[in-house]
Image 1 (cartoon, rainbow, N blue to C red):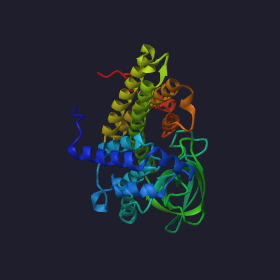
Image 2: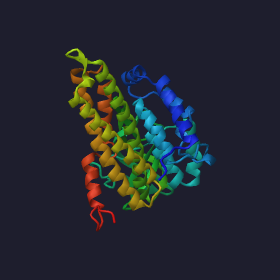
Image 3: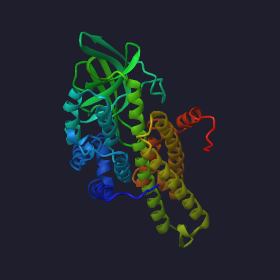
Image 4: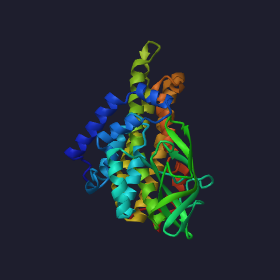
Length: 371
């Protein structure tokens, strides 16, 4: 298999890397967290690079790119621990492009691509854990109009988003709806998440909704898999920087008159971190390359990838903190923020134990052994 990137993909990577290095340093990120965890200005800068339209078809004003380009972008954003929820934009734009009626596509996709509108997925409910198919939200139809009743939790940038893609039960079957944040009956309560980003509890009380698709379970499963692949790529970027920062610290920190990087036991731990990073990178590639596979194959691949990424994130984050010593848990030092970001990503779109269960449930007669 060819793992070389094309010239266009490398140029995309370079453009995002330059923006992260020059426009999204640690101090700017800290300021955004202190201001509430979301910056409209930073999101518009991402849109200015074309990233909001990455998965939007060219006919709808986007770049019409695919999973590999998404992976390249998210790795670079992971290097800067970017707080603005581009993953959500990738998810919602692909869902609308793949499942929404023409009128909905025409209204929203150009605005997503330009950065004028931010759409996020509001799917999590209390008590559902990571089983996205469990849904208590209800949608009712009167004449040709839909009304939605639901409470959704941990909605990314929920009090800043312009609209939500919301799963709800309609006539006993899950469907997906689009609801504007400013619509009657919609209320939000925002808060900071562990990694310094923004989320909200969102309540819909007979809120007017636009039907996206009646095949909601299929569309939501697809959305989750797009999110998993993007999260895996972002985590690789975070781990890459975590390892680099740790190596740099070990080369400057001295004990007994020598740099601690000269201690063999600590060098072995760095080697183990590097091994986990490369395992994670290979599984991130695997996830991105399987995004266009048939549904069952795709779902199985995402569970495998997210499980390995979870193991790697926990190991790399914990080792980085331990190798730094006490400074590794201070808010003033960047490695503590990498650790918190990895912890947050580990539970996003299903934690490690959840996906281990998914891998187990999807084992076929070979019990995981491939002929």
